[in-house]
Image 1 (cartoon, protein in one colour):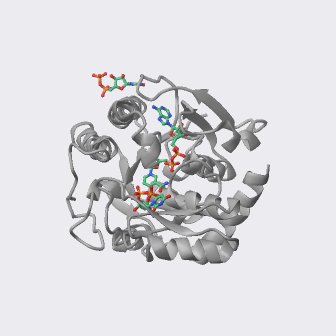
Image 2 (tube, rainbow, N blue to C red; image 1 turned 90 degrees about the horizontal axis):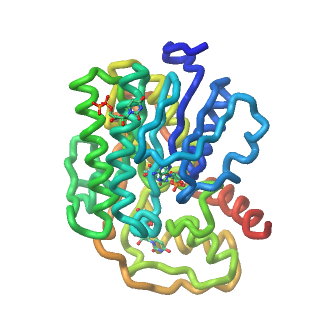
Length: 320
Ligand code: NAD
Ligand code: UDP
Ligand code: UDP
């Protein structure tokens, strides 16, 4: 039976559910007793991320591209579908914008028909190369509309616009989270993002590729903390719509990250510099005051501990 009670949603739809974040979210939803429909076109996702749920009666996988309409029944929707690594979202930039924009329209249309709350995985990229540091939700950002990152940044910004217009125009219960750099087990070894790249390079004894001089910063959140933040947001009252920054405010230079990974993994890798990609943001750190106050949420896992867990995962994944 379907129910619309906020804390007892029985059926959740998770788009991008076979990806890194989506698969962890699904694990927590199943643990909470929900049914889950995982919708994914497997562009960057992998069925192996949800393989352990194959015999779980409350889990269902649906291969589908969110750029096309979807008619299913659910109590709550988590919209995560979109490649997140610059390498992948720049591979087919038109498809990236379509996924963000058409995907948002279709999932919002679905939420409207079902009168279901809907969560959007937005991103710190809406702040672009930020002139305000740390980034607060009120900051409108500094985004190049025509650069190589724009398909992702502007797609996500347009999705936020759609979410807030469906809220104002149609009264939808929206939850817009701005996610900052997150890492952990089930990142794809070939994903291209910095944490997985550095760990995989160190484990293979390859050169560790620092783009630019490595003085740019990022703030890294462990996946379990992030997913706890998603659930706190969805559990929060119907008056809380965001946007809310979800991330870990501890900021590191990329060179510091490389040195930390190398010292943990050991081995003979060298740190080498490669050209900095166009429009690569120079600094990024979330201000999470709103998440602390409105959701009672803050991250718990320090980078050292999260890296240890992630390195242990990749040791096995690479050996397999
Ligand atoms: P991921 O690439 O591992 O997962 C994305 C999933 O979406 C994949 O399974 C992919 O196959 C699927 N997908 C892509 N296009 C689709 C389409 N058209 N239809 C259906 N499925 C599609 O990335 P992730 O790190 O798990 O990111 C999940 C979400 O969180 C994304 O929306 C991303 O923008 C957002 N986000 C992630 C981070 C991060 O650091 N991980 C930071 C900011 C925002
Ligand atoms: N949609 C969907 N599933 C639904 C309802 C709608 O995929 O259950 C899609 C459909 O493609 C539609 C879009 O969501 O065009 C937006 O729906 P909305 O009701 O906002 O607008 P419409 O285009 O139907 O006027
Ligand atoms: N980066 C790097 N080496 C790599 C991959 C990424 O130095 O092998 C840098 C990248 O230039 C950026 C930061 O690490 O400054 C984070 O990159 P990522 O692709 O993980 O995410 P972004 O925050 O840029 O979307």
